[in-house]
Amino acid sequence: MPDLVSVVIPTYNALEYLDTQLEALAAQDYSGDFEVIVSDNGSTDGLRDHLENHPLAERLRLKRIDSSAVQGAPHARNAGAAAAHGEFLVFCDADDKVSPGWLSALVGAGQDYDSVSGPVETTTLNTARVAEWRPVNPPEKQEETPGFLPFGLSGNFGIWRTVFDQVGGFDESLNVGEDVDMSWRIQLAGFTLGHVPAALVAYRLRDSYGALWRQTSAYGAAGVQLYRDYRWYGVKAMNPLHITFLVTLLVVRNPLVPKVISRISTGRWIYYAASFAGRIRGCVKYRTYYI
Image 1: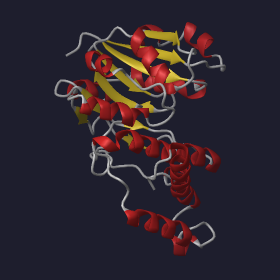
Image 2: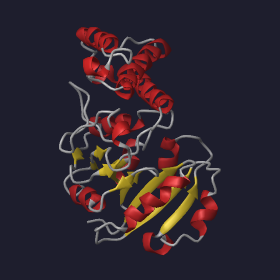
Image 3: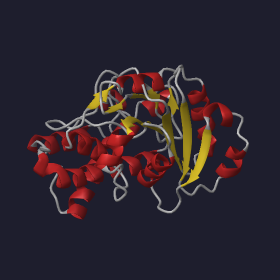
Image 4: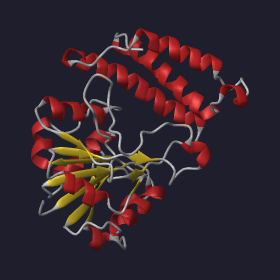
């Protein structure tokens, strides 16, 4: 077991949610030593003052570092890792909530793997209406790209520092998909990535149609970029039937069709439509066909 685990939280104007995550970290059943590093990526919501005399500061060995030099979560995570003292690095997000056994599960699995990641659930922090918008895997199923390597989520990830340093951390040139990219680099370098169903995180979804569209379309575009960069390593092209299926789904199940017929909510339809639109935008931007 590591002598010290470092939990890194990249943060940008998430003060309204951060204490929920910090309280969840204080409630961990992990018996070893750990520190919590809040990597402030240029917040303007009073984060610095809030953390100066935080009631959980001593218990969590809480430290804030300034990562505002480069905007973006990848840089914030890398800066947090650079300031960390632990041999095992763990990443979670400021607006989520880790389960009580989360840290124990990740660190425990880290004894068998070079890097580890866990699942998310969307029922705890979201209304039933919002939770239905975005499909998520059951806890026992690892995130994966069909026909290629699995990947972990950046908001629920653990890795030995030596491995993190060897692969170069998160790619700061990526605005979205940096967790998929690092997961693949880890495995292509010969290291292992384990899935830990018990390391469950409550994930906070975007709760408006506009925010859902922006986030999901960005994911769609990032998928094209990742395909462009990794197709030579074996990422498969999309099945030609996929576009036919998706267009049919979007037409038949659009919000103008009564739900009793379409059997899909407006939010779920937006999720699929935004992903498709993002793919199209990514194809143009990266001059690569991947729909």
